[in-house]
Length: 341
Ligand code: NAD
Ligand code: ZN
Image 1 (spheres, rainbow, N blue to C red):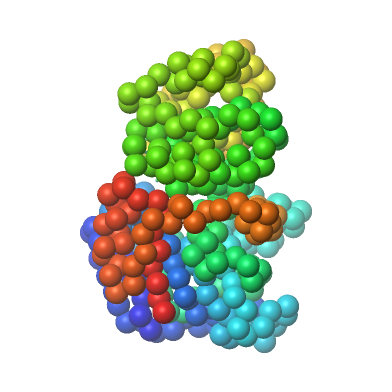
Image 2 (cartoon, helix red, strand yellow; image 1 turned 30 degrees about the horizontal axis):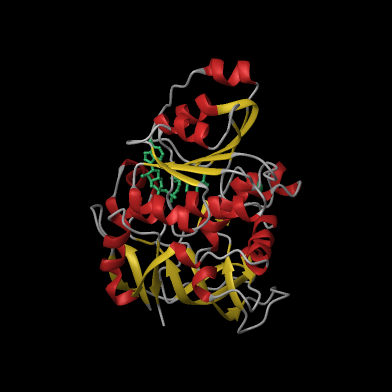
């Protein structure tokens, strides 16, 4: 079958012909229809330090997808051939304490589709049936293909009560922008998003941010004043991984504020801990999606009218994958879809 593989230990990704993955008793085989390119795929593409340490070569990558079940192992129940599905890319162990308590997203033995095992940039993907999410009919394929990063946004945004609250989102990458849309949809008052990239800030405004602030040019505290915010943000969603952005968040939070952190800093990150202590801040780390509450919430958010379509800015046939990776690498994009049909 056709697949996109990290074939060599250098920048790039290559179209290859590989064997179809093998189907175990508890697995399903999915024929891939559409995939999306994740920030993680870009790290792998560029072959940065993290990728060199993490990805065994060769490796079929990719974990954002929509497809259709074409085969099932003999133990699989609850699905049918032809079901339209996406799936959770974190494969959990089932035997650690958190797994056994049902807190599966906290499994300490998680492995990743398209990171530690064969991924979705392929004509066929095999995953445990447990990880499959069957899609309601009224969720379009393009939106279903980005459920994985949308789930990062939803898990982070819904970590704390947002109704009537003033929310600061640092980082208007695809995930930060989707989080802004979610925050507005569920009833936040002001949703302020920061970045240093005007293309992405414009997209964030289109998708519901009250104010999109380029912190390289404008002062966040002036914007807060203009909005009539006298005390500070109630909830912070850190979605940049940039130390300066996190420090700015700590500085502008109200006392008793709550912060959910998704962004991954490149290395150790110094902060003023007095901000955390004397403001009584609560900080929660976020990894992946809750299994599978986040998935149900995602479907419901779309079904209740949340429109994610503007975040998809580019679409290519998979044969033009290079253009897709170039678009994603340019910073002038939202999500980029590759079509496998
Ligand atoms: P992204 O890299 O596309 O977005 C990050 C954004 O931060 C960029 O648009 C960048 O311009 C912006 N930025 C740079 N400097 C800034 C500053 N000073 N202030 C505000 N913004 C600034 O990433 P993404 O794909 O949207 O993901 C968001 C973050 O979440 C990344 O750090 C990613 O590694 C991380 N992530 C974590 C998980 C998890 O499970 N914890 C999952 C997926 C992604
Ligand atoms: Zn586990």
